[in-house]
Amino acid sequence: MTLKPENQETKQKPETQEQKTLLQAYGWNEHWEAELQRAGAGGVPLVAARVVAQFSHQYRIVTEAGEQAAVVTGKFEFEAVNRGDFPAVGDWVLVQPLPGEARAVIHALLPRRSAMVRKEAGQRVDVQVISANLDYVFITNALNQDFNLRKIERYLLAVWESGAKPVVLLTKADLCDDPDHYAALVEGVAPGVPVHAVSAFENQGREALADYLLPGQTIAITGSSGVGKSTLLNWLADEEKQRVQQIRESDARGRHTTTHREMFVTPSGAIIVDTPGMRELQLWESDEGMDTTFSDIGELAASCRFHDCRHEREEGCAVKQAIADGTLEQRRFANFKKMEKELAHMARKEESVNRRTKKQAEKRVSAKSRVGRRTASAYAGDMGDDE
Ligand SMILES: Nc1nc2c(ncn2[C@@H]2O[C@H](COP(=O)(O)OP(=O)(O)OP(=O)(O)O)[C@@H](O)[C@H]2O)c(=O)[nH]1
Ligand SMILES: [Zn+2]
Image (tube, rainbow, N blue to C red; front, side, top):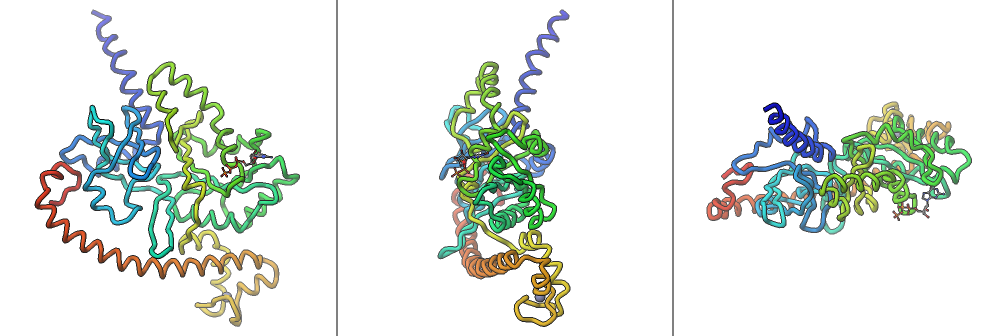
């Protein structure tokens, strides 16, 4: 008699704990729980999942039940206006598990807390989300001849704009006699941003990263080719291989960790994102990011005699004065002007594209109300159905 309830407990308890652990290991928390409640599950039984890898039209997701392939619903695709509306690595999505089928179906996206976005100004501006819901982005720069403050400024701009918090990692500290000197230079152009010198080769500076590598925190690494990102990742994930081995012994799910993926959980519990997109990040700037990255110039500009001073040949220009007396570096100002110009160029492109996209969207809506009536039954169970 006394054995029975105990048995029941041992049967149920590990299962629910394990299932919770898997999603939580990937960053699920009260915030997402609240978003899930807000989204409401409609008529279809939907479960939460995180996107861990993205291919052109297919995703790998992790649900409480494990990892699997997924595609978006036809409705999702139909309603997407640009590429940014589709799921990206790091997104939390609501899926219909479809037992017995190879792929789950993604019905909806929970609102993003942050997004690294790439906007391409070619013939048209296309918005692409490179990764979503990052807490920190490690901006890497090497402590050798490649050290480049201007590059760091550009990355900072992109990270501020994303909504994630930037951290600058100066890699290959073993190649440098005075890492502190360079760290101070970075601090000069990145007020308030943490800067750490590290060396994967000499296992140096790892303690400083412990502040970020916390359970449930999602972190991506960016920086130019050759700065040592792969080496850094292997260094950070060193114990991961062992852990995967352990999981595999106790739970078949561990096997999934060997398939292709762009997101993994480190021994410390932090979730690392490593996608080709983050690696070859093309930098895009915005007004908001500009204000944060160049707050010093903004403050100076407030003291210029003319409100609309362009800091070129104007009388009483505080920015020019700061350059003359050495408090503002000419090169930093030049970088600021260059980015400002690129921004203006992007903004003009975007404006004309927005006008076109709006027209297309209007067409879609009127087409949808026609199609909607015909295929309403097919969508009947979909989330947020407004038909
Ligand atoms: N001295 C020194 N060299 C390093 C360190 N970390 C990486 N390297 C070397 O730097 C080179 C580039 O390292 P990777 O890790 O491949 O650089 P990456 O940023 O991943 O490069 P991509 O894959 O092109 O993006 C390799 O030759 C590494 O051995 C370090 O801490 N110290
Ligand atoms: Zn001025």
